[in-house]
Structures are given as structure tokens and as C-alpha cells.
Amino acid sequence: MEKEYVLKHKEIPVIIFKMDDESFALLDVHKVFDKKRLPFRIDDTHNVIQCGIKLNSWIKGRGLADSRKDLHKVQNLFNAKNKEELIVGSYGLNLTDHYWIHKTEENLSWRDLNYFDNKFDKLQIGTSQNPSIDESVGNKSPNFCVDGSIEKRWVIKDDNTRVLLKGSRYMRMQEPFNELIASRIMDLFNIDHVRYTLRRTKGTNIPYSECKCMVDTHIEYINAHHVMESGSYERKDPYIHFLETCQKNGINDVKEKIDTMLCMDFILGNEDRHRGNFGILRNSETLEWLKIAPVFDNGNCLFFDRENEDMENWGIDSLGKAFGDSNRLCLNNVDYPLWYDENKIDIITGIINNELNNNERLNSKRIEKIIDITKERIKIFKKIAGGKN
Image 1: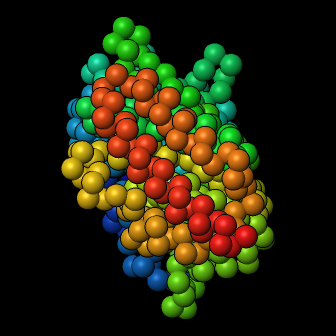
Image 2 (image 1 turned 30 degrees about the vertical axis):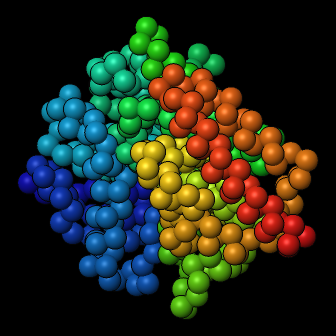
């Protein structure tokens, strides 16, 4: 049976659409109310086919990633047919932006439901490798609308702050240590970033990272994919297109901020800087673009999933997803970084060495190899930074 739903931005209706109430497949777009508040770009509000395709993709992308190893466990725990049912059941609410969905027949308010202001159920899937969190007693939680392949949990601390806990996908469990390493390096250079701390589960001593939510009820995160889609490409280089789009919307220091991110990604070998992992912060009432989002999500670096022989093959370069295929090539866009301090740059390897040695799953030979390659990256970076000074 089909049901009518509304996509809202806070309390403002954006789209009316229909879904199958059994399969949760999108059937039709009825009306677009507010084009400027759409979470994707459409050129014509009367083109319901285009809008329907993009809305369907947006809803699917809002839920748990298909690559999440605990996806089926979560679905089974709540007797959900698919992840779309989990999204709809939790109103599509998250702790990233201010969009949500509900049946038009329901009289609901953002003020009463959003997870920035209201309590939510906690979720645990009972494996020893997950952060130890109280088991959920219901299906209303921002944990059904988090992206990425790593198992993640939002929890509310005693001081009422919302924090995200992130585990690992691999036996070496290196990602939480990498988050801490990147955070300490960016602290060293006063780079705007989301600060991560390393935690351990009680009893099992499994490492995971913890960070505070970077947005609130007034400010939301808009990822780079949507930023770049919001303006016409005109066959421009994607890096130039992103800069110009942000500048047109009032963010004047975009090049400095993005170049900083690219430098860190090269030095650390971050292989996961896709266009969902950087973007802007926006005022959700006025839609004013405020600033480039702090650098976040740095766990997939320092050969986190590579075998020893792969480390040799990759060497100094790593997979770049922001604007090209190579983090090394992305450095060609970078001007002299204002944060660069020649007296501090060599401290980076000391931070990496200290923190990786706290991971009992890594042997000294592997750590030494990571340090050696990082030193080579820093040498290259010094030449680039020095040449552009």
C-alpha cells in the first residue's frame, strides 16, 4: 500500500512524495515546495522524474552503508526488511543535517523529535568488537542514518553532549589510533579539525575513537558532493569548481582550508577523503554558508588496511578521492600553507610512532616501515612548501 510522505528541512516542507509502505520503495514525487532547500540540485521543479531519481538516491544514501558488516544484524534486531525501513522508522533524522521525513498524516514537529535537543535510544549489536553501549529498546535513533563502512554509535554523555564512537573493520584495529594521530598533528599546527580521543571498551579492551558532534540545531553540515552539484561545472577542474562555488557563496578562505586538508591527506596517506568526508557548515535558518567544515574522518590512513608488501608497492602515494586519483597529485594545487612551520614538521613522525606503539596489534617492523614512508612524504612536502614560499 502506498503512503504519502513529506521531506522537511526543520519545520519547512520541501517535497511531498509517495512510498510503498511494504518495500519502502519511492513511487512518485507529488510536489516540490521549496527548491532552494532541496538536499540535491534539480533544474526544473516540474521535472518530477529527475526529482524522484535524486530523492530516491538521497534516501538510500542516508542510511547505513551496504558495506557495513553489521548491517544485517541491525536489520534483524529491529525486524526491518531493508535499510530504507530503518530510515523511515527513525524519520531519517541524524546528527549531521536538519532534514527528516514523515507521513503527511502524522502531526509531528522537528522541535519534539530532533536528536540535537531530544534523547534517543542507544544501540548495541552484541559483538565484543563494538564499543560497549547500552542495548536499544526502540527504533528511534540517529544510528540508523550514519554513513561509512565502520561500525558507529552516537551516544549522549552525562553532560548532554552528543559524541560519535567509531570502531574498526580490520584485525589490526588501527583506525582509532589514526584518528588520534591526525588530531594531535592538527593540534600541533592549529588546524581547524574535529578532535578525536582514543577509548577502550570495558573488559575486552577493544580500541575505538570518540569525537563530539560538530553541528547543532542552528548549524548543519553539507557535504562536498552537494556543494559541487549546487553550481554548474562548465567543464571546470573539480578542485577549481569547488573553490569557486564556495567563494560565490561567501566563503573566502576556502583555498587555504582545502589546501590544508590536502596537505594532511598526503602526509598521512588518507585514502578515504571522498566528497562525503569534507564540505561546508551552513546556517539552517538563513541557508547562509558559514565556513569550510573542520577536517574530520582521518582513520583510513597510514596503511590501515595494507599488508606489508602493499606498503612497498604504494610507497609515498595514496588514493585520493577528493579531486583526483592521487593524494600526491592533489598537492600540485596547493599554495604555500600558512600553517606550515619548518621547526615543527618533523615532530609528526614522533607522534605517529608514539601512538602506533600503543596498538598491541602492530609489530615494531610494521611501525618502522610506516614511519620511513611518512618521512619520505614529509621530505617531498618540504620541497613543495619551500618552493612555493
